[in-house]
Image (cartoon, rainbow, N blue to C red; front, side, top):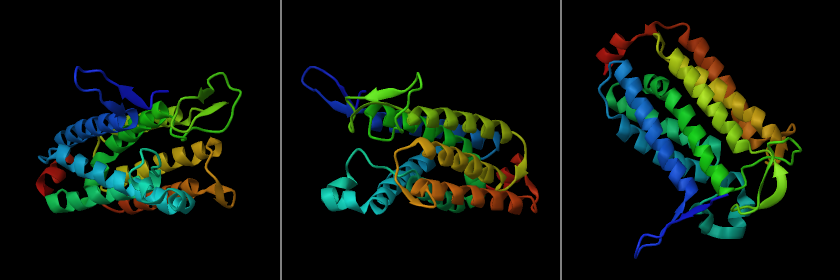
Length: 260
């Protein structure tokens, strides 16, 4: 594993965290996809700026939720846990990131929910790319021990293990790319406001719910982890959104352009 890239540039020898590097690449990819999505919908808005704000909010939310989810770690490490390169909770990043997009969509005149519809493919793909950073840094997000031929050990990770375990970040990368591709294809046709967001919440929630069965996270209720409970809530909310959207008129490109 490569938690850091050690560069030798004459008088400068930086150690670049691979997690941070992949997070930056995820943000760049997400900004590009959101820009394409806005253009396809006939919307003239600052996609790059909106994604940048959402990424910062998502990072803060992921770290805050991790601290709330693992108080024992905060008790052991103190405030240091807030700027540690490990320890980011998926649900906190989702809530804060979507919240930032909702606010920006409302302020820009696009519409809060409509903005999330347009950003759904980018959110799925950006999440998948970000998981590569977890894989490269070996930050403990991998799964349970396995005898499958693609099982991997992480002897040089931030949280090393010599056992062959499920490379769950790679599973989530594949899931994110497939979900993003599906949502992009689906978003090419006019759909009621809230429909694409509902599909994103269902698909991403279901993917995280399933992968948690082979993750190392502790079980807290009914044999499920915190992430699984949050994922179940995501699926339910997505289904409610689709049912609500089905009672409304279809939001096409021309409608979106007029709203903006």
